[in-house]
Image (cartoon, helix red, strand yellow):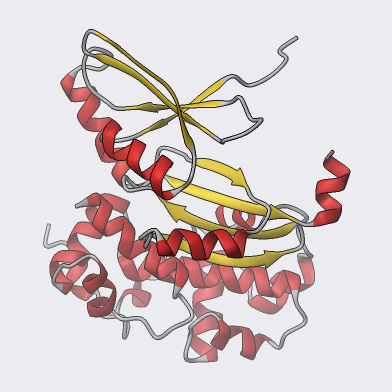
Length: 143
Length: 143
């Protein structure tokens, strides 16, 4: 079971820029959406939605540091569909806005896999963030 | 003063399956294969000049008790036990070769970075394996 969930998590790491939803990712693990969300949370300690948000924010941090791309372009590059949601999610997780992050951070001279691990933000998502089009409200445990 | 790394190890769920993957899929060669009672000392290594042996370690008796082995298996299968980093002369060529040998668990297809081009796969158990083709200048500096 863990191995299948890991395969689905890897799919989110790879395809974060695409319009992913729970049924698509759950299918990678050969599980129903509800079972997948519940199991993922139990094994990895967070909902699939939150994992994907952190992955997307981490990639946007990379692009803010390493490129001159417009912030709105970066927002769409990493899979967000609205600039407002992106800015709100980024600020909630990182603690500063995307533009402020850009002005205070430059390129890092370490391998990309290190950057992915080291800069993956751990900040808590604000409460409202859980309900999203990603649709893992079912992952919220009843306890 | 320590002069070199002799043996490192990676946790696997099944030594025979690991041997098949690391030798027949990844292209390493078998090193030691010694059976003593219930314990099998099994290693693989990069063919050619590299003398570093990678010991394939399977949780269980006689080294671990059943409960410890179960904890290890849980962690291995969620990709939490660390992995290996290899180098290659041509990562895109290797990518094609791995696909032709039936490897499907790519965490990251070949991607260009400032230090070279790398890709990442998972072994059958969940361990991450990264394979790097260094940029020529970086390789020259290191030599």
